[in-house]
Image: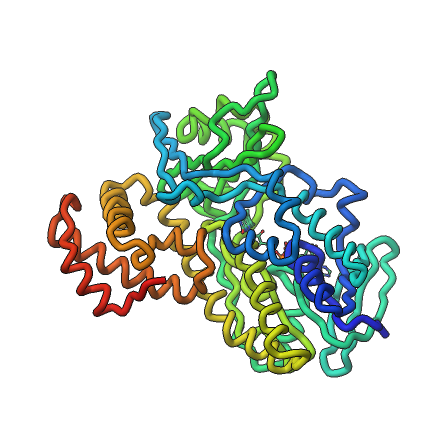
Length: 451
Ligand code: FAD
């Protein structure tokens, strides 16, 4: 029998953060993680894979006191640097204010800091090499396999929280046990991580303070900067079809693709073919699940509850916001776990679904629309409207990345704002002049309030 108040499954990004919130409120926590301790052993998550951290993630890190430790190791990115087919580049800023930037952070480093921070509370123990294989939610029993000995181990729990990512085993048990709506929607596109190394002099080969994108219609390549002056590139590409991971395999296929589509990038990637053939292909899917809890004994959080495709750079940020929201509910409902889990689930499920949908829409924008004249015109009008109606008209990207506005509200406001932009362009297709009085009326009519 575990004596801990809480048993968490998974010491990825969400588990240790949630454990810290719980521990700081006096609860004892045990985390069971299937992998070995990455602070001691070099495992795949230790490669220089990075993530975009934005306002929601930063807010949670500030709440648990870890932000000041993470911040110095992040690299600000002020916008998208678009690489056209002919090699010409142009910057599309993310926002209009100096502080409207997102931050590239090393996944492994952040994960390690989060684990250490959780342990330093004195209330958190992480047990590595423990893989959850099943959960008996009636008898409060968890079955683990120990990855070093392959032995099986049964443990009891008081309350269990699944932070075990998109293929969550705890979610599977909750879905089997309760009346849960669950669907996993594959995107049909996957990804491959590649690298742009630093110059021999140790400097960045290309501009570091941006997120580079090579949009190519049905697929795209992106690159985020690392502290060692390399870039982690990700090729998002169809899993099957005429031009896909199924057809691009040999050295010739890879070089043909890159020479024809990414010829300014290929020069920067001396290990392209080796990386492409050696690195695994990741699959992408969105998880929609409702509710996220079973009574007061089991809860899902982070990717386990709402895996989203990575095109808004929000999976981790959303997961961190989950932890912050749950902590707020703990404060409001002292130890009333039934109310805490129930309210958390009913508040956050729609936010999880909204960011899952917006992330898919953003894939189309990033890989295809960013270079359309129509998109550029709409974006121009959007930025003008933001200047005209500050605090009231906020571009959707900014609401997601620079604010704490719940995602479901962002989605609704975004739809209404989309309509306003359309009407402005109907009145003047060039988007040069904006009828302020007309927009004012629409803002009132559509009930877009000041934030
Ligand atoms: P994970 O990070 O997946 O952690 C789950 C943990 O549980 C792991 O440590 C795993 O080993 C462990 N585990 C799994 N099963 C078991 C088991 N049965 N027993 C015990 N332990 C188990 N998000 C952003 O905010 N910004 C980005 O820029 C961004 N970029 C991304 C790029 C890519 C290519 C991908 C795929 C995702 C990206 N994300 C991004 C999303 C982000 O990675 C996830 O949202 C985030 O990792 C979720 O954290 P988590 O702890 O819930 O899940």
